[in-house]
Image (cartoon, rainbow, N blue to C red; front, top):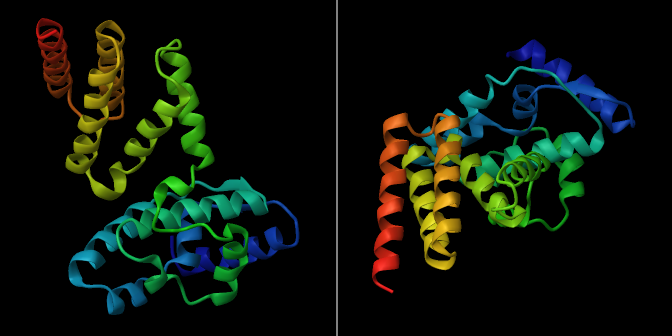
Length: 221
C-alpha cells in the first residue's frame, strides 16, 4: 500500500467522521496513525528496528474492512497498543494531529502502557471460541489471558510468547486437579501448534513434559 491508498484512507475517515460506513484496511489505518520518520529520529536503533518490523508486517494487511466510528477507533487502539508495547507510541504518533485527536477522544483515560486495560473485540471473540471448544474445562477469563499471549506473537516473537505460556501453564498445573490440568495443558499446546507457533515435534515434547510434571506432582503428595 502506498501514497494513493493512504490518500483514499483520509477520504474514508472523513466519511466515518460524518457517521457513514467506511472501508479501511489495517495498512491504511497504520498510514494514518504511525509516523516512521519520527520513529527513525526519536527512537534508539533497537526500538526502531522492532517498530519498523511491525510496521512492515502490518502494512501487508490490505484487506478492506467495513467499519463505523467505533470500529475505526477500536482498530486504531489495537494498533497503537501493539506499537506501544515495543516503544512509546507518543514519540511517533503521526503527523496528522487532527486525525490523532479524532480517536484519542474516544479512548479517554486509557493507559497505553498497560495492555490489560483494554481487551479488543477480536481477542474477546477468540477467547470465547477457545473456551467453548474446551467444553467448559477452561473459563473465558482463562482463555482471554491465553488469547492475549497469542496476540503478542507478531510483536514480541516466539521465544517471549513461549516464556509467558510456560508461566501460564505452570499456574494451571499447580492449582488445578491433575486430570483437569493435563487436559488444559494438552489443549492449549495443541492451539499453539494450530497457529504455527510451535511444530508437531515441539508440541509432543511440551505435552510429554507437562505429563511428567503432573505425574511427579501426584507422586509427591
